[in-house]
Image (cartoon, rainbow, N blue to C red; front, side):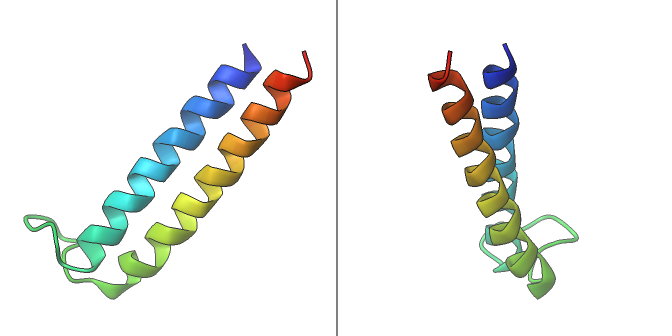
Length: 64
């Protein structure tokens, strides 16, 4: 069960990071984060952390 939780949280972080990136770059409007360059920096960091989390989740599922 632990692998599923890790995979889900990692996938959520990748999606949120991607959304923050496109909002920070100004491609998605209607938010306070639109055209704020800090979100264009934070977004890829969160997405990369999500990819690492997914990798750990996949790795823990293979050990069983």
